[in-house]
Image (tube, rainbow, N blue to C red; front, top):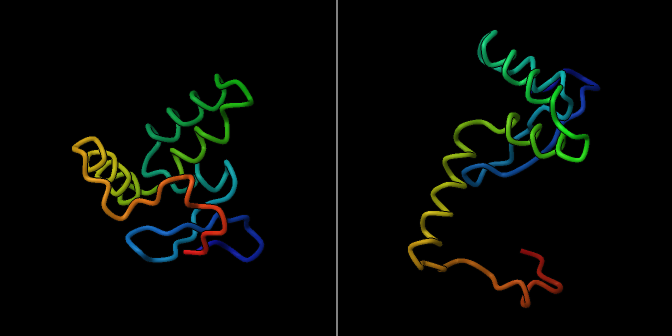
Length: 95
């Protein structure tokens, strides 16, 4: 859980609502070791500003979320589109 006033991002992972760090400092602080923090710093330092949000999102996601996304991609690649909503049907979609 974030400290009071720290920015957070909220998403769903495994059907549960989860708070993720909402700042570069929060993401960095949550990394497991110095090697990961150094790799994060190097990637952020070298990134074009337009790519920083995407890089931060990737580093800020826990492994469970990455695994969940990869499982969905593998299922789609295999031709299983069950549970998916075509984009043209999303107008007004409320979940």
